[in-house]
Length: 522
Image (cartoon, helix red, strand yellow):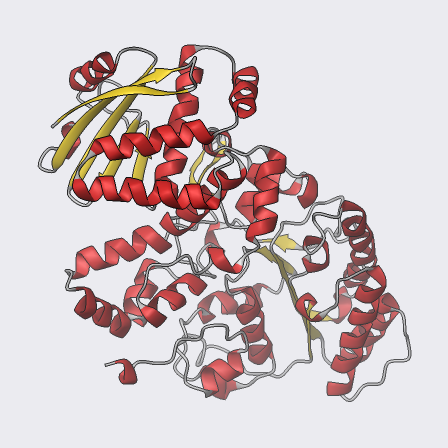
């Protein structure tokens, strides 16, 4: 079966190689047709490994008129296949060690592009060499300008603000050339991870149309559910065969683990890197998350004192993303642009609702929170995780409860006191601290956990779903029996009738900063 499938394009960023070597291609050319016909200079931000580089590469071959590479695609018989000169510059190919290296690297890449087009550049300074290249290449025919990962020199030094600022100043000078190049441009698209600010790199470049969070291009990068089921159907059938699950169950598990990224709050897509990784070995792993920088993210969590409820409690407006330079941006803005949070809905006049995209990101980010926010050492974290999963497998909540107590005993008392100072000493606020830690804990164990699920009579604290077992947890600064009684009276578990349903009342001991006891009934 595997031999009949098209090869998975893992790590392939060159469209020509992808097509000529027979890799699987999810056809996105209708979006490119729309972009190219409108002709406006565009800007697009997306998280890392989301297909930005492949998109620019596809546009390059489209504008070079290489029709043969687009056989059987949507655009094949709709494009005029006229050849245009193309400047394709990727900042991933530039040394970002310091501003001098960035300047030299840009100049080197510009000279290589000039040589490939039979042009000799006389200017040595990156800004003037760029101007010269644009004028010479666009003299006879208006050209296409594609710049990939525009912000990489800044992002590489987020932990070194002075160097990041020097790189920003250099890039502002470099990119300002584009505005005066308008008479020479047929089309322009710049991509990056972070949205530009009017006062930053693009302070002089106000003619770019930012399509990052527009509905019409929300699914241009990433795979929709329809595209997954259509283009990966052979891989899906193989997965169903291997797991023995129904098609519906199998697709739901993939969706829960890898779908969920949204760039308009309405349409949702899969991260391509994770899906390709999964279909390579059919194992649910954190493919996308693990290609990032866990150390940097951990330090960021520690420095910004991040907790889950701070990130997802309130909607945020789109203007937040372009109001700050990325190293000074609020945590919700940075984490959304880098892909650790995403839009889960849009509310008029209030903005975007944020949450983790999917199980992959939720699990991995929660593990980093346990380590860098709550101080759980890796060995302790692993032991707790194994203990909780063991308790769930045995349906022994006593084992689970003990791991919960170990977790709270491991959290530094200074963190607890600081939270009380910041949030207040009100009983509901104190209880919320325990809810947040436990939610982080269960997510870090890869368990499907839900907080504050609504019923017609109120909100449950925590719901754990593990196979056919469902645990309804209520935590109170009161005897466990009282918490158990509230679950019964409010009917928190009614929607789960038909499963193995457990009600668990838990007493919080704020003096000991831990959980005191529990009562459980089936």
